[in-house]
Length: 244
Image (tube, rainbow, N blue to C red; front, side):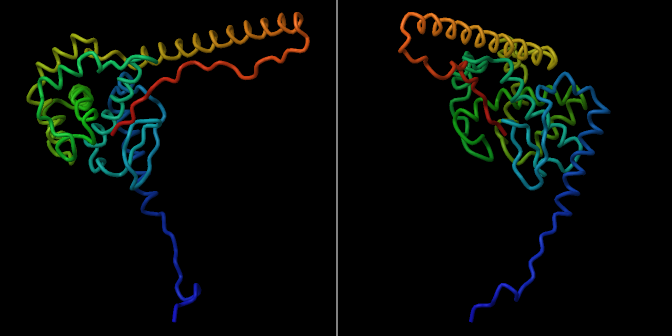
């Protein structure tokens, strides 16, 4: 006979999850006090989801994996910030990696395109050659190259990618420098440019809306029975990269 719902008491205890979230938050605050992270923080909205995945978009989200030590948390945090760096460095119709994507494929035609050696897809694997290289450079500036490389050596995923960007640091750096990704532009500068772009986009939308309203008024005077169009034009959606 099936038991009734009153036979077993089921409690939900979120205490451990809260402690883990508090630990990550406290470590991140300590890291920001200890290091000058401002130039690498291309988004200022961060959330912590205990036992959840870690990814960059639409909100930089830190799970509890890859946060066992402060160095690992630092490199993980910077990895996700590098996704935001590339997003800000691009534009509504421009992916900053696309001009040399084929060159990466030419250099590494046998790149693994699955975890744990590669990333989650063909495109993500080659894009992470850029992200992981930038991550190590940023991390090395803060805690030294030996410790930064050690974090890359101990990661679960992207194993081939990390080995490759460490071994080919100089030729990849030359490629990224040629295409304007390195030296990295400071976060405050790119964020200011993004805000100015958005303001200009909104101003253009408002001007277009005012022009349409003026045209509708003129049309209404000429043809009283006509109906004005509804809705406002929207700017092209800016593409983003969800990343891990």
